[in-house]
Amino acid sequence: MKNIELLAPAGDIEKLKMAIVYGADAVYLAGESFGLRKASKNFTNEQLKEATDFVHKNGKKIYITLNIIPHNDDLVGLEDYVKTLVEIGVDALIVADAGIYSTVRSVSKEIEVHLSTQASVTNYKTVKFWRDLGVKRIVLARELSLEEINLIHNKVPDVDIEVFVHGAMCISYSGRCLLSNYMCSRDANKGDCAHACRWKYNLVEEKRPGEYYPIEETSQGTFIYNSKDLCMLDSLTDVINAGVHSLKIEGRVKTQYYVATVIRSYRLILDAIENGSYTKEMAQRLLLEIKKASHRDFTKGFYYKKPDETDQLYNSSSYIRNYDFVGLVLDYDKNTKTATIEQRNRIFVGDEVEIFGPRDGFETFKIEKMYDDNDKEISVAPRAKQIIKMPLPFEVKPWDIMRKKLDENN
Image (cartoon, rainbow, N blue to C red; front, side, top):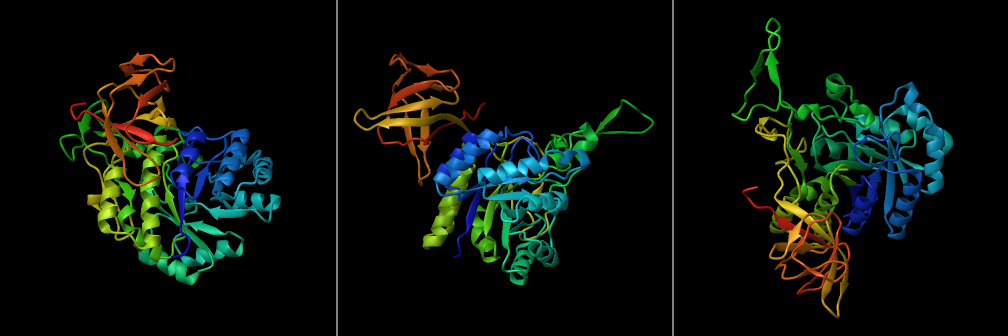
């Protein structure tokens, strides 16, 4: 198996660090302009330098998105921004537009460029076209099957292929959508999607204004374009065998907990494939771990067939959430067997919780005692990011995560 890259989303500096710690080979993120995720915090130029230094210190790579579909006014400041990114030393830029690509090349002939899925590449001739212009990697359109991807790889083997393997699916062509713009003037092609495809809708007849008629697919209503989430965790060997170099996880607006949970499972599967220990049972076990993070039901997207009614959700656009991220381990004293933890959601003495890290497996235990940062015994940690201490019957490490199963009645 050639070196397969696991590529993680990074909506802010904390998520970036979490992704690297939990096994990502590279991260992708945006600065304050030209990227396609306004809903994530994104990075100032100073934060981009900090992020790049952290990633490189850990021997990983960092890619910056410049993948909006720009109008004339959107190009203002682009050249200076590209110069800044080159000076910072990021590993690659992700673009979708030929004008942005030409600007990048006018600034630097050397910096690596990846073509975004927003460019909607679906055939090998287009891949050859961009390769001949100097593009190193193509993020293929999501509308391709594994068979089509394999043909592209065989026709153009000297181009790296990147595909999405996990995350939310757009009901649009490779993310190019006007629905959000039309409904509420938020341009999805400039990073400001309102996810109008997942709203509930009613029917209004032309001559009966104000009278709303329900469109019902089930008793809960209808969600016309409400796709399931993509998950290829148990099918990665098929993706790799198709000639894919980079496996991309969607989710720059997701939580730290989501990033850690998903990246960890994909890392463990990739390592098992590489060392020959992979089994279907392992994949199913780690799929259960992924389901402990916020998710929708899963689909295989276009990889094996064109999506049909079985790949849609008909009862809700909400995420399934069974666990809370309640604490992040900051330190552990081996002598006193005490962990220092940063609280993320309320926890009580008596709660049964799980702790996991980048390694396989997790520990389950019942909280017997907790102390605040003044070493005063407490029964509850209610404040956001409150620093607490608790004795643990096993060793933990910084960046380990504590989670708690939600009450099924909630």
